[in-house]
Amino acid sequence: MQHDKVLILDFGSQYTQLIARRVRELNIYSEIHPFNKPPKDLDQYKAVILSGSPMSVRSKDAFHPDLSEIRGKKPMLAVCYGAQYLAHFSGGEVAESNTREYGRAKLSFVEDSDTFLEGIHEGSQVWMSHSDTIKILPKNGVLLASTHDVQNAAYKIEGETTYAIQFHPEVYHSTDGKQLLENFLVKIANVNPDWTPNAFVQETVDDLKEKLGNDKVVLGLSGGVDSSVAAMLLHKAIGKNLYCIFVNNGLLRKNEFTDVLEQYKGMGLNVKGVDASARFLDALAGKSDPEDKRKAIGRVFIEVFDDEAHRIEDVKWLAQGTIYPDVIESVSATGGPSATIKSHHNVGGLPDFMKLKIVEPLKALFKDEVRRVGASMDMDKTLLGRHPFPGPGLAIRILGDITAEKVRILQEVDAVFINGLRDAGLYDKVWQAGAILLPVNSVGVMGDERTYEKCVALRAVESTDGMTADWVNLPYEFLQKTSNDIINKVKGVNRVVYDISSKPPATIEWE
Ligand code: XMP
Image 1: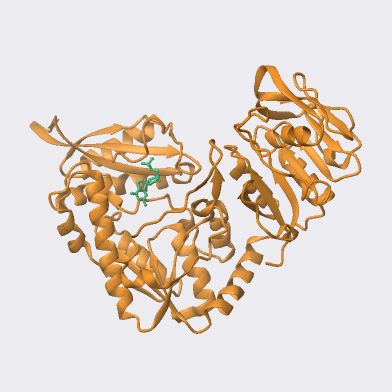
Image 2 (image 1 turned 135 degrees about the vertical axis):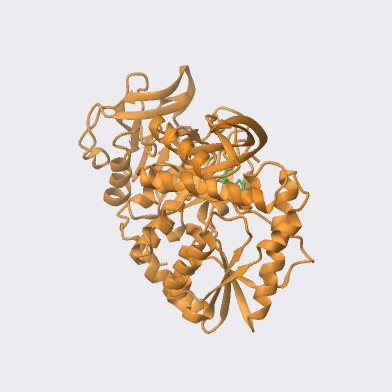
């Protein structure tokens, strides 16, 4: 890679990923590594950021790595726990503070001529989240800024490009936080902010060309953003040698298989649509436990994909739309690096396509970056803006057992809801939405007749990563119209409810 890189050493803070995102928003490439497994070659990084942590530096279990390879040798910014640990490591003192400092504070300057504070507003809001405080600055420490409760809120070490802040610049509540990161990285560490989506596309395509040569690659398209953007990058690099397979498991949204397949073909992709709905429905017959349903779908998908991959002669590679959050190793609160890499197969009995070499062009990107990369390749906005949709599809939104008729009903209901969101200009304001078919019938009255039909729930959530979510406050008028449209248009449904549970304690999907 020809760009300057920033290393973020993770001490387990819930905000570590946010630091990486903010840095990347500055068009600077950053990587997260656990503090206890730093990369061997530190020379490749132009600057280092130490993250926060749930730990106290005073605890005997605290993380106390040797910073001597970094401090004074490279520009370093230490955040929260990082700032405390830097003080502790360099001859200062950290003590328990009288109150746990959590939330908003206002910054006042002590030494405002430093480049670090250029463009930062005196009195600007910063976000604190800590229970220890730095009592004594490290040797050669120079105080730069304080808040009402925290004297040593920002400091530097004289004669070095070493800076430390007690607050979190990476959260939006720190209003000038991004400017502060830019000051440190661009003005102090001289990092070149040239890591743009266009540059990423160009370099990735060049790398893929070199790596893949004339080899054939197979990729499973899902209709989602990640696999679509991965396909487009590979298509640019190797054209017809990319063989895409798009499987209809019969559990997609209404018309999705045909619409998305057409869209893929319109993009010039070499794609084969495989309608295996009947095979999936057969495998699901009589199954009502959510995990049994997931397993059956996973198994049939592998069978179908393997059959198709076999038809491609001499294929060498399997491409995947894996993104950065899937591969980051982060430090758990208990200290050990916890890998979040998903392993999804048993060694030994692997289907043939899984024995292929793996290529993952999006492995370094966050979801929002994937969307920007897609946009820079002029991919369709509706494709890039699509809500996440689970692999097992409507199977986990039909509670209990699955029949073709139930799938039909739910597809109709879901289409009324999703099209309604689009028509009302609400689709892009919602992170994920869908309908759930409940295993209850309820009494209704239509015309003069008593009915006894299905009840559906609507779900719409706001989220950034699906880990936590809030239900969306959709306008009553919209809910009213949607409910009427569903009951009038979808035969078999006479009642609509709206799910007002957040995650946690609920989950986004009902199964
Ligand atoms: P939950 O229900 O766990 O969902 O709050 C969080 C996010 O994950 C999606 N989800 C799945 N995606 N296979 C998938 O590919 C699954 O089995 C699965 N279950 C949940 C869900 O749609 C949401 O975006």
